[in-house]
Length: 349
Image 1 (cartoon, rainbow, N blue to C red):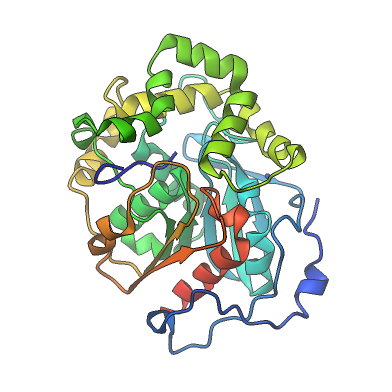
Image 2 (cartoon, one colour):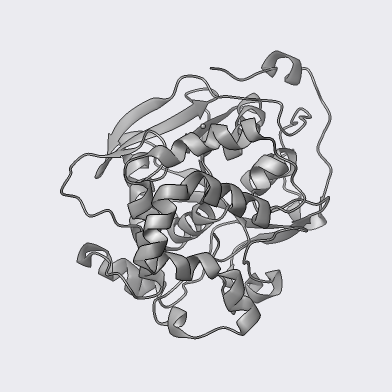
């Protein structure tokens, strides 16, 4: 789930119908979000409209063979959408066709340890540290010959997007980040939080134990459904919606990546030396200068920072929006219209 800063998945359905819709999204508009170029008009879409992607693609990129969904024209403006834990690419099953209808080339990869993404070598360390995930996405961009893209995400995906925006500024055209600035540091993570805040991170401490690792291995389906309910208490997802994403957790490296991610955060598992320089830079909590829209939901039950704590970390054109209506942690799946609108709007900055 998202770090606290300062204490805290064969086709798109209904595209033909959507493309004749001409309703301009106006929710959460701000004068600050206006640009000289008129934003693309997005069709209206109800969350849960689409049930699946077209056939997935695979590409060797860095240490991985990455599984990903793709939508929109091959020559469209690239947008990379990054999922979190314990979720998968289906967080964007409604966002992707919205953006594709506006002419974007949309890439939605499975992160390491999820879905059809696999390590190319059995010898590669199953490393979940924050900079490793960002390097994976840069390698994916290289493999797909994408020089620069809008990067958008939530949870692990938002943190990864933050890191790319901060360390590979030339590869990031603009940023959409749910829960704002999520870059962490091992030194900062040494600091204890107040009891209520520590309670919200109960699963992190569970994963720190061998009992926790064994429990997640045995009960990952039920465990992750519980996290979905806690993180989005007002989202009435059905079993089919969860089960569609839960297939991604059957990845042979899933448990190792998740457990390492949380142990690494607490300094209980080592990272790899090849990422040391990146982590040193991230430990300074670098400013993000690319145009950014941050989003937060009004019913986010997962640990997340208050928007006021990260506003000053964005030095370029910036806007924050709070999405209302009982939206929880999985914002792009629960509120795809608003998430897609943020991507389109930030593209105009």
